[in-house]
Length: 490
Length: 125
Image 1 (cartoon, rainbow over the protein chains, first blue to last red):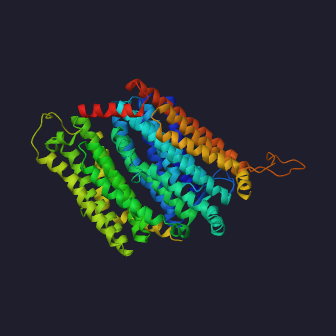
Image 2: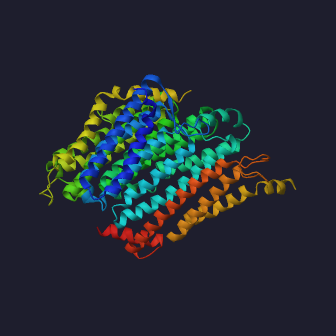
Image 3: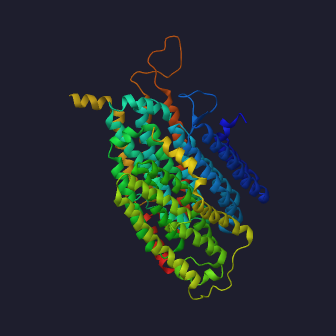
């Protein structure tokens, strides 16, 4: 295949194009369901091709509309972008499937829901693949708007209120990012990351205020969108009140796209010298540590199943930022692995929690007593997710936590390794009682419940299987992750 | 004198920063949801002004190539901001739609009252 440089573009275009076809055919439910799933599958195939190309030949550019850079827009496909894009495409498949199975019951407009999910996924691919900062901003805005809409689409009081709060804070974050882009454009005259990096090498010294302010606004903007503590206030409500498939995609993928977008901007546009010359590292380390500990403590106090999972996401975002801020190759590998692992396990947890709620109506932790015996498969997947969250060896979560802890030790920052240990303990404290209660607790009145039919079981089983597979055989993901981490230390 | 000269040269930047702060403040401190959205728009307008004035030079012409083209204004920021305006309009439209739904459900536009109603609702469940 000699046209492989168009694969990253096609990953995005297939999803975008289908997003515009689906609402036109809204009356043909069966057809749009197949179109929706088909678009996910085709974009997965293109993402796979992109990743294979990056593995064999390294970073490549995909120029759009044959306008040469720096005037045109190009996709700058590096190992990090290809890896995250592949993660998004892979995770989107089971989540799309679950959405196709449950959309009719959970949301008002099925075709509208499919459209939004397709738009959202397309924008996520765009954020991690593009090499142009304004293009990234546009993708960020598409994904923000779609993310808000897939929460509100449930049309309940709570979901609308949560999504409005998310919208306001998200708009604030967008403002910060746009301001940062303006400040960068002011001193470099470029929007292409490669050219910004080269120009900044000579001009950054003359305009220290611009660079500092830009990075500050970027940190706040991306921090709000990625729910980095203490800017996470919108997340618990938004993620817990969304429909199940939305919760999985929001917690598993959307938050990660903003983190990767931030990492790409910091490393590729600003470069490591500027990153290290500012006090950004201690700030990020503090925020990440606070996120890990306080997120877990808040989760401990929750009585609602989905809210607990949402607070745990706040803590897990802290892990990824910690790996990024530790600034070592192994810590970065841990952070990138955690992007994949957390997406898998949180996806499994949210999908099984959604099935539990759908089959039994039990939203509170106190109501799930004894339900594990009625829904063994659903709670089996939930247990796999929980064990992986805690970091039991043999599950995916263990590998990334190990890499993060080793990364902290590489830098002689022992306290952060201890933070990871404490947080694992906290995870065990709030997650394990759910399982013991579900399997060994007293029977409640919710007796008629049973596992859902096979088509609804499969997506969560696939995610659970992925968690076990990557736990036993992490070498599957490691080559690309290693390449991504080494790339950023240029 | 030097200070005032510098301010005069950077008047656009100064005004956009002031507008930004006004919008930011309105967005975060006002309880009325419509005012929050207005704050959001003021903030966006400030950013657009800032971005466009980066490319502007005193006495510059529109960048259309003619025989005796003099100093030209950089067209890139203006083109980018067109996209920015479209995004801002769609955000506003969507936010207003959500406000309509919220008013239907809660009968008020006050963010604090909505929060109080919601937490009361939550405890009853």
